[in-house]
Image 1 (cartoon, rainbow over the protein chains, first blue to last red):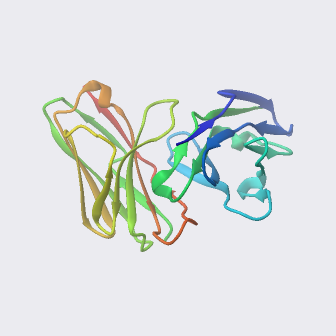
Image 2 (image 1 turned 180 degrees about the horizontal axis):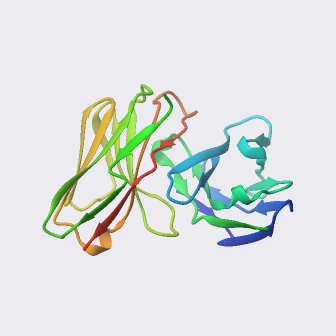
Image 3 (image 1 turned 60 degrees about the horizontal axis):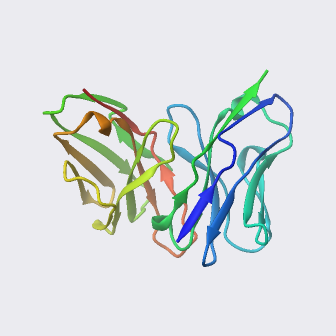
Length: 113
Length: 114
Protein backbone atom coordinates (compact mmCIF):
# COMPACT_ATOMS: atom_id res chain seq x y z
CA UNK A 1 0.00 0.00 0.00
CA UNK A 2 1.12 3.55 -0.61
CA UNK A 3 0.01 6.91 0.73
CA UNK A 4 0.85 10.57 0.39
CA UNK A 5 0.65 13.31 3.01
CA UNK A 6 0.67 16.98 2.17
CA UNK A 7 1.16 18.68 5.48
CA UNK A 8 -0.09 22.13 4.54
CA UNK A 9 -3.58 22.58 3.16
CA UNK A 10 -3.03 26.29 2.48
CA UNK A 11 0.16 28.28 1.91
CA UNK A 12 -0.09 32.05 1.50
CA UNK A 13 3.07 33.79 0.30
CA UNK A 14 3.95 37.23 -1.02
CA UNK A 15 4.94 37.72 -4.62
CA UNK A 16 8.68 37.21 -5.35
CA UNK A 17 9.17 35.32 -2.07
CA UNK A 18 10.42 31.71 -2.04
CA UNK A 19 8.01 28.88 -1.32
CA UNK A 20 8.21 25.24 -0.28
CA UNK A 21 5.25 22.86 -0.45
CA UNK A 22 5.79 19.74 1.62
CA UNK A 23 5.03 16.18 0.62
CA UNK A 24 5.77 12.95 2.47
CA UNK A 25 4.99 9.48 1.22
CA UNK A 26 4.94 5.93 2.46
CA UNK A 27 5.33 2.79 0.41
CA UNK A 28 6.67 -0.69 0.87
CA UNK A 29 8.23 -0.70 -2.60
CA UNK A 30 10.14 1.68 -4.84
CA UNK A 31 8.06 4.61 -5.95
CA UNK A 32 7.72 7.19 -8.64
CA UNK A 33 6.80 10.69 -7.44
CA UNK A 34 4.93 13.49 -9.16
CA UNK A 35 3.74 17.03 -8.59
CA UNK A 36 0.64 18.20 -10.45
CA UNK A 37 -0.82 21.72 -10.54
CA UNK A 38 -4.49 22.58 -10.96
CA UNK A 39 -5.47 26.12 -11.89
CA UNK A 40 -9.06 27.23 -11.21
CA UNK A 41 -11.61 25.53 -13.47
CA UNK A 42 -8.91 23.42 -15.09
CA UNK A 43 -7.70 19.85 -15.10
CA UNK A 44 -4.37 18.80 -13.63
CA UNK A 45 -1.05 19.52 -15.33
CA UNK A 46 2.20 17.72 -14.59
CA UNK A 47 4.83 20.01 -13.04
CA UNK A 48 7.61 17.47 -12.59
CA UNK A 49 8.32 13.85 -11.80
CA UNK A 50 10.97 11.70 -10.17
CA UNK A 51 11.50 8.24 -11.62
CA UNK A 52 15.19 7.54 -10.87
CA UNK A 53 18.62 9.12 -11.07
CA UNK A 54 19.35 12.61 -9.78
CA UNK A 55 17.36 13.43 -6.67
CA UNK A 56 16.92 17.07 -7.70
CA UNK A 57 14.26 17.34 -10.35
CA UNK A 58 13.51 20.48 -12.32
CA UNK A 59 10.08 21.08 -13.77
CA UNK A 60 8.10 23.67 -15.65
CA UNK A 61 7.47 27.26 -14.52
CA UNK A 62 10.68 27.40 -12.45
CA UNK A 63 9.64 24.72 -9.93
CA UNK A 64 11.97 22.03 -8.63
CA UNK A 65 11.67 19.19 -6.13
CA UNK A 66 14.11 17.07 -4.21
CA UNK A 67 13.60 13.38 -3.56
CA UNK A 68 14.84 12.38 -0.11
CA UNK A 69 14.61 8.64 0.39
CA UNK A 70 15.67 8.64 4.04
CA UNK A 71 13.08 11.27 4.93
CA UNK A 72 10.51 9.81 2.48
CA UNK A 73 9.89 13.32 1.23
CA UNK A 74 9.47 15.06 -2.11
CA UNK A 75 9.11 18.77 -1.31
CA UNK A 76 8.35 21.26 -4.07
CA UNK A 77 10.22 24.57 -4.18
CA UNK A 78 10.34 27.77 -6.16
CA UNK A 79 12.82 30.57 -5.36
CA UNK A 80 10.51 33.41 -6.41
CA UNK A 81 6.77 33.04 -6.95
CA UNK A 82 4.44 35.02 -9.19
CA UNK A 83 0.77 35.85 -8.87
CA UNK A 84 0.14 33.38 -11.70
CA UNK A 85 1.43 30.52 -9.51
CA UNK A 86 -1.74 30.72 -7.42
CA UNK A 87 -3.27 27.26 -7.77
CA UNK A 88 -3.84 23.91 -6.07
CA UNK A 89 -0.81 21.65 -5.99
CA UNK A 90 -1.06 17.87 -5.68
CA UNK A 91 1.73 15.49 -4.80
CA UNK A 92 1.25 11.95 -6.10
CA UNK A 93 2.99 8.61 -5.81
CA UNK A 94 2.93 5.51 -7.97
CA UNK A 95 4.55 2.16 -7.41
CA UNK A 96 4.07 1.07 -10.98
CA UNK A 97 2.03 2.85 -13.56
CA UNK A 98 -0.29 5.81 -13.87
CA UNK A 99 -3.07 3.34 -13.18
CA UNK A 100 -1.77 3.06 -9.61
CA UNK A 101 -1.41 6.76 -8.88
CA UNK A 102 -2.27 7.97 -5.37
CA UNK A 103 -2.81 11.70 -4.85
CA UNK A 104 -2.22 13.71 -1.71
CA UNK A 105 -4.95 15.96 -0.34
CA UNK A 106 -3.55 19.04 -2.06
CA UNK A 107 -2.03 22.37 -1.05
CA UNK A 108 -3.63 25.64 -2.07
CA UNK A 109 -0.85 28.12 -2.87
CA UNK A 110 -2.02 31.71 -2.81
CA UNK A 111 0.44 34.36 -3.97
CA UNK A 112 -0.32 37.79 -2.54
CA UNK A 113 0.68 41.10 -4.17
CA UNK B 1 -2.01 17.67 -30.57
CA UNK B 2 -1.33 17.17 -26.85
CA UNK B 3 -4.80 17.86 -25.56
CA UNK B 4 -7.55 15.92 -23.91
CA UNK B 5 -10.88 17.50 -24.81
CA UNK B 6 -13.94 17.12 -22.61
CA UNK B 7 -17.51 18.11 -23.39
CA UNK B 8 -19.61 19.64 -22.07
CA UNK B 9 -17.74 21.97 -19.73
CA UNK B 10 -20.78 22.38 -17.51
CA UNK B 11 -23.84 20.16 -17.04
CA UNK B 12 -26.91 20.53 -14.86
CA UNK B 13 -29.21 17.54 -14.64
CA UNK B 14 -32.11 16.27 -12.60
CA UNK B 15 -32.08 12.97 -10.79
CA UNK B 16 -34.25 11.32 -13.45
CA UNK B 17 -32.25 12.52 -16.44
CA UNK B 18 -29.90 10.53 -18.66
CA UNK B 19 -26.83 12.35 -19.91
CA UNK B 20 -23.36 11.54 -21.23
CA UNK B 21 -19.94 13.06 -20.73
CA UNK B 22 -17.49 12.84 -23.61
CA UNK B 23 -13.70 12.76 -23.77
CA UNK B 24 -11.42 12.71 -26.80
CA UNK B 25 -7.66 12.52 -27.35
CA UNK B 26 -5.55 12.14 -30.48
CA UNK B 27 -2.17 11.44 -28.92
CA UNK B 28 -2.30 7.72 -29.63
CA UNK B 29 -2.66 6.96 -25.92
CA UNK B 30 -4.04 3.50 -25.19
CA UNK B 31 -5.02 4.13 -21.55
CA UNK B 32 -7.91 6.41 -20.66
CA UNK B 33 -9.30 7.29 -17.24
CA UNK B 34 -12.29 8.82 -15.50
CA UNK B 35 -11.70 10.67 -12.23
CA UNK B 36 -14.20 12.34 -9.90
CA UNK B 37 -13.09 15.43 -7.98
CA UNK B 38 -15.06 17.13 -5.22
CA UNK B 39 -14.25 20.71 -4.33
CA UNK B 40 -10.95 21.16 -2.49
CA UNK B 41 -10.24 17.40 -2.71
CA UNK B 42 -7.86 15.32 -4.82
CA UNK B 43 -9.14 13.42 -7.85
CA UNK B 44 -10.53 9.95 -7.14
CA UNK B 45 -10.06 7.26 -9.75
CA UNK B 46 -13.31 5.78 -11.11
CA UNK B 47 -12.46 3.76 -14.22
CA UNK B 48 -9.46 2.84 -16.35
CA UNK B 49 -9.57 1.56 -19.92
CA UNK B 50 -6.54 -0.15 -21.44
CA UNK B 51 -6.65 -0.89 -25.15
CA UNK B 52 -10.36 -0.06 -25.16
CA UNK B 53 -11.10 -2.65 -22.48
CA UNK B 54 -12.22 -1.82 -18.94
CA UNK B 55 -9.32 -2.77 -16.68
CA UNK B 56 -10.16 -1.00 -13.42
CA UNK B 57 -13.55 -0.19 -11.87
CA UNK B 58 -13.09 1.33 -8.44
CA UNK B 59 -16.41 0.05 -7.05
CA UNK B 60 -18.31 2.82 -8.80
CA UNK B 61 -22.15 2.70 -8.54
CA UNK B 62 -23.92 1.36 -11.61
CA UNK B 63 -25.58 4.72 -12.25
CA UNK B 64 -22.22 5.60 -13.83
CA UNK B 65 -21.58 3.57 -17.00
CA UNK B 66 -18.33 4.03 -18.94
CA UNK B 67 -17.86 3.27 -22.61
CA UNK B 68 -14.79 3.30 -24.85
CA UNK B 69 -16.02 3.08 -28.47
CA UNK B 70 -12.51 3.44 -29.92
CA UNK B 71 -8.96 4.31 -28.92
CA UNK B 72 -9.61 8.07 -29.09
CA UNK B 73 -12.96 8.34 -27.35
CA UNK B 74 -14.20 7.75 -23.83
CA UNK B 75 -17.76 8.32 -22.64
CA UNK B 76 -19.37 8.32 -19.22
CA UNK B 77 -23.11 7.66 -19.27
CA UNK B 78 -25.08 9.04 -16.34
CA UNK B 79 -28.49 7.88 -15.17
CA UNK B 80 -30.50 8.41 -11.99
CA UNK B 81 -27.74 10.37 -10.28
CA UNK B 82 -27.92 11.72 -6.75
CA UNK B 83 -27.11 15.26 -5.58
CA UNK B 84 -23.94 13.93 -3.92
CA UNK B 85 -22.68 12.99 -7.38
CA UNK B 86 -22.21 16.68 -8.12
CA UNK B 87 -18.49 17.14 -8.79
CA UNK B 88 -15.86 17.89 -11.42
CA UNK B 89 -15.41 14.85 -13.68
CA UNK B 90 -11.97 14.64 -15.19
CA UNK B 91 -10.85 12.53 -18.10
CA UNK B 92 -7.19 11.64 -18.54
CA UNK B 93 -5.06 9.59 -20.89
CA UNK B 94 -1.58 8.09 -20.90
CA UNK B 95 0.68 5.85 -22.90
CA UNK B 96 0.95 2.20 -21.93
CA UNK B 97 4.72 1.82 -22.20
CA UNK B 98 6.54 1.06 -18.98
CA UNK B 99 6.46 3.10 -15.83
CA UNK B 100 7.41 6.40 -17.40
CA UNK B 101 3.78 7.29 -17.80
CA UNK B 102 2.43 10.79 -17.59
CA UNK B 103 -1.24 11.57 -17.20
CA UNK B 104 -2.70 14.17 -19.53
CA UNK B 105 -5.88 15.65 -18.08
CA UNK B 106 -8.80 17.36 -19.73
CA UNK B 107 -10.31 20.51 -18.21
CA UNK B 108 -13.22 18.52 -16.83
CA UNK B 109 -16.99 18.64 -16.81
CA UNK B 110 -18.52 20.44 -13.83
CA UNK B 111 -21.64 18.42 -13.04
CA UNK B 112 -24.49 19.63 -10.86
CA UNK B 113 -27.29 17.20 -9.95
CA UNK B 114 -30.47 18.85 -8.72
